[in-house]
Image (cartoon, rainbow, N blue to C red; front, side, top):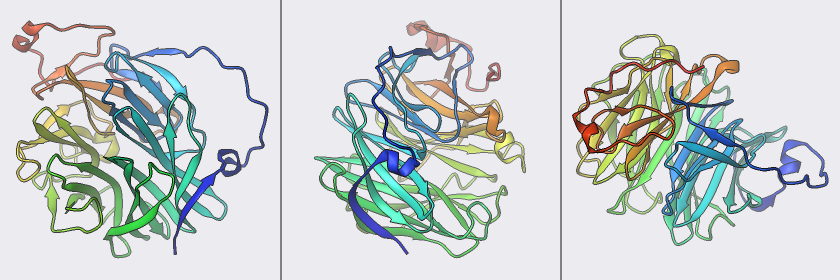
Length: 371
């Protein structure tokens, strides 16, 4: 059972806290991406975008919202997001929205807020007595937003629950929401997780998700296509069908004229799951109708891909490191050259000239582990 909600939600009410007098503003702390690509400790999922005015925004559990104006070499904290889990972020023009899940005694709420100089009021897009996880937010332009969220009846991540992916729509910039469709409704016992979506240049929307019949064992990344912004869904297929391993969708990125998709895979260390996972990339020159063979772009094991962010000179690839240890999760920001040939070192403030193309540095070169 679920309820679509179009009402403002008090953040303090959701977190169980009481209203206090506003504290004095503090000077934002500058956080540099280190030479080993490490940025910050985090508590869970982190997602990112690049805005049209060339800002990079990351939102994460335990990270809040941080912003970069130097292509992801340093970040300043914008706002904290306490008790927000499975976050996502979207933008059009200079407008930005943040989404995620908050859990209450009565169930879960998928919530969305606009982000300007500060975070606007949370709006509950979907309220359910069941468990909600894994949001994905897509901006359509003109104030249109699509929110995907997984709903689980029964225990999650156990192959005992029944998963559905809900698709919700707002036509007024996130003020009100309505259920648009349920693109995926699986049988009990199959984990359907990590929806990742992109709106292509031809107007088609592609939704990818993990289909996992046995927790921690080889899984599939399946996809569907929608011609009308999530209202209806046509035929789909599999991404990375040649990769046999525990696959975790990272996300799509439009890099130049290509469409990229990144994911985590333990195919080089079968059964290793998160501990053995590396980040793989596939590319398409025809809007996802055909794909290149997969390439390992981050070869250090222990990766959970959090997508890709296209910038003029590089592509950022956020990843969670040491994911299996709750106290040692960290966010790394890897860099790949803008046409996907090799890794760029995470040297603080580094500038690379044209001669870098003749460098011997390759994707597979090992870098130091995160702290």
